[in-house]
Length: 477
Image (cartoon, rainbow, N blue to C red; front, top):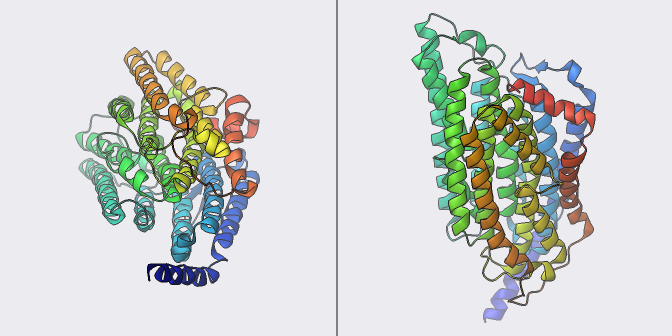
């Protein structure tokens, strides 16, 4: 009787899947088209012609938006190719592939527009809209109660954005007290600010940085990130960590561009404290982690801490921060997608049952190893060069405490990650598993990510270096 039910269920899935075979290839085609448009924009608009405004100046194409449009659409193409390969080998994915693909495309459209937003309130609203698109994707996870995780993700996000909106209200109050009209256009808000001591302005800036920092997974409001990244499907974890993360980064960059030359010490101190806390939290949690996907999630918290420390210094560290953010988009995507491959074969995210992965899954094991090396800042990957530039900038700023803490915490994270991951990769196999074949087509994006990381760490084309430098200058570098 049970066998008959299983056969009927399998047959139903196959019949349902027959009508959705076109969805995943169409998603890959749409992602490829978006990537080609992003590259076309990159080629069509040289830095000398930027910024270019659209929609009554509510949208702007400048160095910041151009850089991140290229990065996120490149990452998204790799994610879609991975989903296409998983859908072919996982019949249950066919059941919701239409809604999943629609939500992913809608989320990408919202974020692409958000990257170009020249109005802080519009950018704020689009970040929240991207979260509304992401939450149903998180609810499709394979943990015990993914819907509860999705609701907590929504709650944390709403709380973070509410704090950010309180910052907008404080800036409005500051302008009202001084009898100044305020305009939240990124290129006009600076004229409404004052260099004189202003409690409302300080409070507004503090709320905005704290709220957006929470969206980046910075301590103390970081709790949503490891839980959500672990519970979400692999493609959703990659999109949250490498795509939605970057629209929040752009929002922080917009704040820094607006307050450039104003409240520099105040900004520095708040980012410094959040960066300190994030590195300490990440180091402690990674030492205790026995789940390789959660370990990657806490490594994302660590990366956010490094970014905050670099931004707190500005100037000499700014270029390193921008390079670090770009390289991390590819590192995190590579790790999450490869973790998804291991999860599909071993059926668990726990480190314990996995041993000798590089023998059972040679390609996936090698890619995961390269991703871990890039994550930990090994040469010749871009993260090594970026971390050296950030540390150099911290030393030039004379902040030896930040330099010492960052070095100590990164060392602890390195040792803790190696102790957990390397036996999993190179130990003696504990279980016998059957790995479905993986085509070279599905490996191309991951290999491309590795190539980009090596290129950024060794030789970066002048046109891309100029773009990175322009973004660094815009945030005070």
